[in-house]
Length: 170
Length: 170
DNA sequence: TATTGTTATACTCTATAACTATA
DNA sequence: TATAGTTATAGAGTATAACAATA
Image (cartoon, rainbow over all chains, first blue to last red; front, side, top):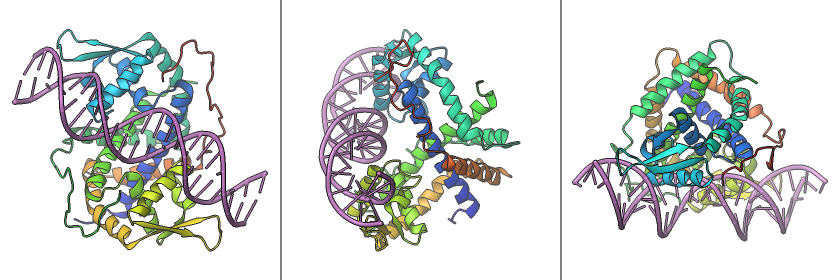
C-alpha cells in the first residue's frame, strides 16, 4: 500500500485543520449566545427539521456515537426545557423526543450568529464555483461515509502485545 | 443579515458531518493501532515534520486552544516516551519539545493504517478534478481562518440577561 | 433473542485562574 | 509589564458494561 500523494496529504490536512478551526469558532458562538454545544445545537436543529419529533435512535444518527451519549445530551436538553421526552405509541420501548417552543426560540436566537460565523469563516474566502464544488464533493463524501460499516468489520478492538516491541502511550 | 442560501447550508452541514465521521474513524484507527488521540498524532506529526524539535508555543499552534491543554498532552507524550522536553538555549522561559526515536517509530507504525482510512473514507468517493479542487478550496479556507483574530475582537464573552426572556440550558 | 433506552462508572480532555520564572 | 509554561481544579463529554423492558 503506497503513501498518499502530496496533493492528497495537503487536502486531507487542510480539510481537518480548517474544520477544526471552524468548529472551535462555532462552538464559541453557540456557547456565548445560547449556552449550547455543537452536539446540542445539532440535536435541536434535527428535531426542528423533522417536524419536531424523533425517536432517540433516529435522533442520534450521525451526531452521537454511543447510546449513553445521547441519553446524556437529551437529559441536558430536557432539563433545560428545550426538549421533552415521552413514550412512543407505536413501540413501547422507544422514547420520542420533541422540541419545545423554548427550544425553537433558542434555535432562532442562536441561528443568526451561527450563520454569521459560517459566512465569515467558511464562505468569505470562496469565490466563483467554489461553493457548488465544495457542496458537491462533501455531499458525496458524507454519503459515502454514512454507507460505510461502523467499524465492526475490522474488529481490532482491544490491542494487546501486537508484535510491537515498544509500549504505546498512556 | 440574510439567511444562508440553501446551497451554502448544504455545503456547510455536509462538510461538518463528513469531517465528524472522518474524525471518528481516524480516532478509532489511531487509538487501536497506536493508542494515540488525534491531537497527540498531530503533535507527533508536527514534530517529525519540523526536524524533530519545536517550542511549546509553536507546537500548539492550530492544534490545541489553551496553554494548559498543550502542557497536558505534552506531559502524556513525554510519559509515554514519545517526546522529551527540555529548556531552550535561546530563551530560558521556553520549553523545547523533541520527538524521540520511539515517537518516530510509533508514527511510522500508525501511518499506514491512517492513510488507509483517509483513502477509504475521504478519497474513495472523489473523482476527476475533485482532489485538486478540494485541496485548493480547503487550503484557502484554512489560511483564511488562521488569519482571523482569535475571537477577542468580538468580546461577547459572558452573556448575561441579554434581552432574552427565557433561560438558556445548563 | 434482538432492540430501545437508561444508569453507573471510569476516564479523557479542556479551560480558567493562579502561579513561577524569564525577557 | 509581557511572555512561556506549569499546576490545580473543576466541569463537560464520552464510552463500556450491566441492566430493564418491550418486540
